[in-house]
Amino acid sequence: MIASLTLRERRLIAGGLAIAAVLLAWLLVVAPIVGGFGDRADARAEALIRYDRDERAIGQLPSLRRAAVAQRRDRDRYVIAAPSATVAADRLKERLSATVLAAGGEVRLVEDLARSGAVARARLDARLDLAQLATVLTRLRGEPPLLSLDTLTVATDPQAIVTHAGPMDVRLEASAATAAPQPR
Image (tube, rainbow, N blue to C red; front, side, top):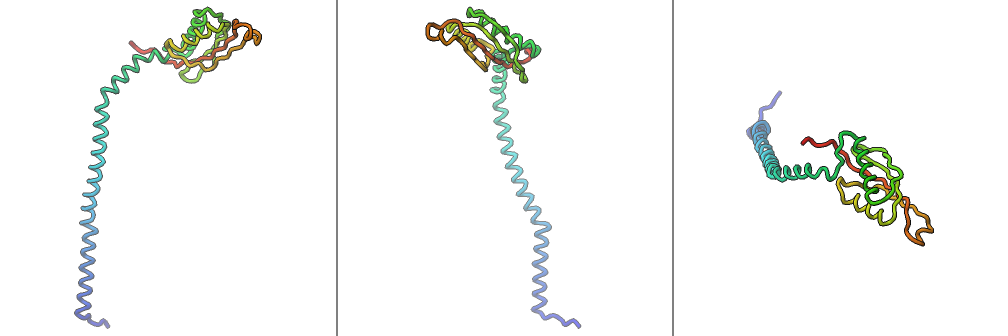
């Protein structure tokens, strides 16, 4: 048989049920609403950060456009503009040969080297004296399109070094970036 509960026990059970009802209401109704406010506050803060970043990026657009125009304008200074890699390699070889000939040297051999991506490479063997070599290197360094001088080998008779600097056998390996010509 079930004994009846005392007044104190009934109050304790009623209090426990009331606390359970309040906790249940909190968990099912109030906590999700309060959590939603916090989530939306975090989302607003992230949106403000994105807005500030985007506003700075938009503010930089004019300077980025000016930089892009300047890069397009200066492009021919840094690349050999050619419709194909073969034409670019031929232009590189012509430039090396013309530079040596303009300095008064003798071109012995000009050949392609293995290409890698958008880079043309060439080797030139020539006969130059010291002044001509200095002229060739100065012109290759200063005239567009800019080249990368990958290898420079100079060979001469050891006896000639002691007496006077005569003609030297010079091997140049150079490379240059290539790109298709720009539409005008």
